[in-house]
Image 1 (cartoon, helix red, strand yellow):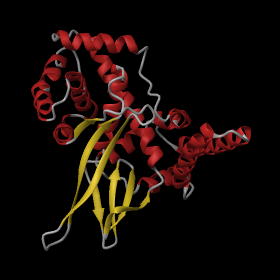
Image 2 (cartoon, helix red, strand yellow):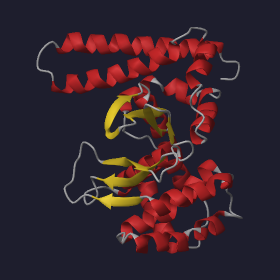
Image 3 (cartoon, one colour):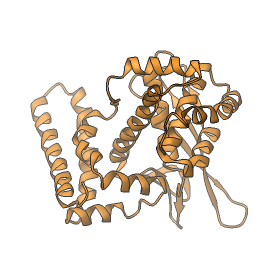
Image 4 (cartoon, rainbow, N blue to C red):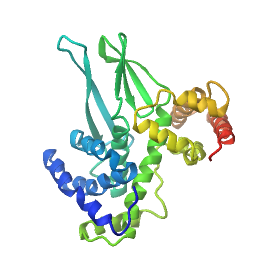
Length: 313
């Protein structure tokens, strides 16, 4: 969706009453309400009016919960509890959702924007085809990734798919896109002075374009893939519309080697785990660093194969 001076004020004002209503419903403090004034129209610009209803439904039905005990490691997360409703017919599965802020009182405006956008972006990109099931397994989708539950015991996670880290990398990239959309609002003449004050504060915190610090190493490794003009539009569209089951085959077909997607996602998960271990390690750090570097090289090799075989890069 394109914005210009002719439509920017109308778009920003369009969701003010909606934001006021949900802020009253959930008793949000004013600074949460004020960032939602900017975040909600930015989501609509990012994904288009076609998805406006889905975006608004997420913000209306998913509460932002503020933890009083702050956590500087896990600053926010999107959480769901899988539920089952049986009335004698086929079972119906649904989820109870919320976004939790673990860092709020000491968070800067940019950090608050990043946290809220990142978690709601997971939610929005998990809206369509969220749950599927058969006689043994219930699958709950988060973007690209899935969590699998035993159909007889929904509290027990049977397995997680290996593409959680790739999901996070893509979500980080989209979070940056949405914050940069908000940052671009300052290029226009805005009638609402309250909005102008926020744009000034945001502009003072960002030089050029915004770069998130989340999943920094993994995002750095995959930066060329995130810029690829075939990969990103294709995956963004499939992920938003819940059609992710054949992404591995599509990726493998482009690379030309079966199992490339599985290898890529497994290596990214391994690098994250090794990075976490490395931060705590006291011995053999050089050996561990070299092992991570070798895995990084393997990831970049797969990405290069993908890029080399892409017609549109």
